[in-house]
Image (cartoon, rainbow, N blue to C red; front, side, top):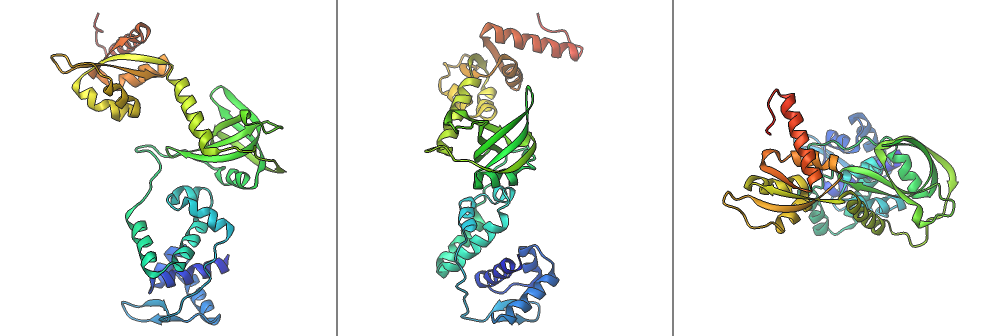
Length: 331
């Protein structure tokens, strides 16, 4: 570990120029005293580290000195694919590896390109979780990621909506969607048939045990293609019904914000506005219970016209709310 840290320190000085001991300590996540010891170790090994005193002082490399220790390890090369998502890389246990890989890459680039990569990193940031919602806790993400890398079998205790189950899983990949992690795996499938691939939400694992057993991935399995197809199938299964709505001008502005692409598509097919600016739209919805909750978010800005069962369910929900607040529900 110390050798890796010394290399990071050397690359920091090469890439950024003069840095103070507190700045180096913050970057390396160590104490200032450790930085002093590491600087001494670099000097003893022949690296020309100079110390400048005064308010503008700090440590720097002798002018013209550049290390050529910029070869990437396998793990560092893999981690570069997560360069745009430092948070998820850290969740996977690759934060330090990614930082070292980036330093090596920048050190190997010509000065003008290295400066350009620094400007990009300073000006663009990817924040994956959704607004106003914390990401799910994922205490078993690191061992599961290790199982994915090493094609190791997992024994898992998983919490479903209908109760808890135990599964033997052959993990094929991890997906980050909307700030939440999902595991794509073969469930209890000795023959590794692609048809047995299932998706598990990482936050619902009660326990995960990494075994010594390995497995062969299904030939030709494409994680991105599988995820795209399963996502489409899930959306089609969930949105099995269509609601017919009459919505106000304000609801027309709210629909895309509340329902995303479904809301925008519904507005694209809206009928002509009436004298008050209200329009009729049709929008796919989930089960009746979920649809009632979703549509009530529009409040008095929307009226459910159909289907009759959904209209009746919304009417009953509104009546229950009126009784709860001591009001007389409209007849």
